[in-house]
Image 1 (tube, rainbow over the protein chains, first blue to last red):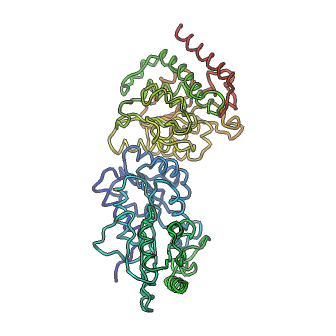
Image 2: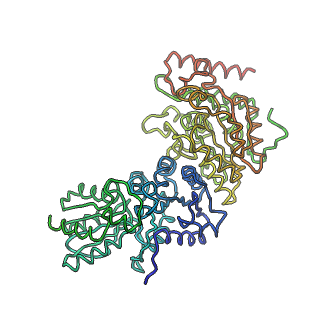
Image 3: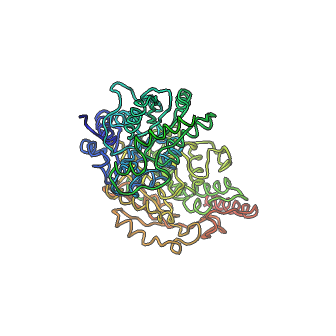
Length: 313
Length: 292
């Protein structure tokens, strides 16, 4: 059986790799370094690892200062605090100033689990996507997160990495390069497009298998970069399939679903379209799988919705 | 006199105190002229901080206006970004951009935005305006210098009302925790904020005790005494192992009699008659300094 890991684990690996080769890499954490997987970097580079205490706003602004001083800072906390609590700091000091700061929002989504609604970030993509200059990357497995972190370090400008503690196999093909902004066709199909961002890609791949067993060809898009979004690739897929469903561990407002809706509307596409995600509500305590079941983020729901979309063509 | 007991080894050039005083008078005139009559501007804070600003730019900071990206330059962040007109004047006088640009202040297409935008104005080091964030960024700059083995110092000017922002105290903790002795913060303690006296709106005192409790070396000075400002900045330079806070007592609207100590000077529009009166007064002040 393959090792199961979260995207946060691949991120932590990448930080260690980057730290060894690039002395400009700095890491800031707000008292969550075990969970955010930054402690490996911290152990190796105490001179470039900054524990900022439980003070996310100060951490983000300090990261801005580190970038002004020529470092490439990665600022870390749970996504809900990083994106939410320090939004104004990110807006003014990082996005508006277009500084080379990387924000890693960890334990994003409902799969944060038992801590409940206060700790489950289902709005962070909406917040970060609204910021000019900000890139938003949502890796789907640990290896993709590792590659995305390297790409983020190379990119000159602010990047939000949305990371998960939800453990999965690596879905990514071994030799596939990671390119910021690329919409990856992970499975070809003619009947419906399933566009996914994030660590629940496995649910979508599972749904595509079920649909295939019913003779339905689903095209699976891995949209790891929600911003900048390759709208042409979305429209091209829709031109092939005639229907599209988006799937994300995020509110249906402001995330991938909204971004695709904008692309479809402005691209004059009138194909059947549904957004699957957290339906404009907050989460609650529970295990990851219980919550995904309760909020409809399941392969079965993808399959049922895909059937509806095809029927509506 | 500037203290003879405090050598300033990192200073490339500086002007004598009497020259700095005259410069400050000229800067006040240029601030008022750049703002003009009939439009709301942050007169009060720009005029209260002018002496500190002049001491920083014309006495303390190691800068190369011809090379704004010089890695070893000292950094100055105006955390109370609304009073940036005083900073614009100093930057223009140093040659970061043409003096003529001052006339475009806050107008469409101008490099001189209502609040500091480092991507639009040459010589600015950070974006500020939303209050409470500049000290944190200064700490980050100092940590970067430490990590990279650079010797630049970081100066940051805060408002006293700004000290009501919680993040200021998060940053105060960070500077104390990391013993950032290359960070010097100054509070423009003019006692007034947008809607009234600081102590009526939200009590910030005892400021000195608070900063000391957070691990800072605290100096209390008259923020309009140029020699005292320079001395305090030198003391900060020579303080090892902890950051320095200079609490500079100032008068809001300093230098324009009808604005001095007035809450309304925070963001005021003055009439053409008031403008003429202010210009006349400031010009007379410059003339008296030249004759002294």
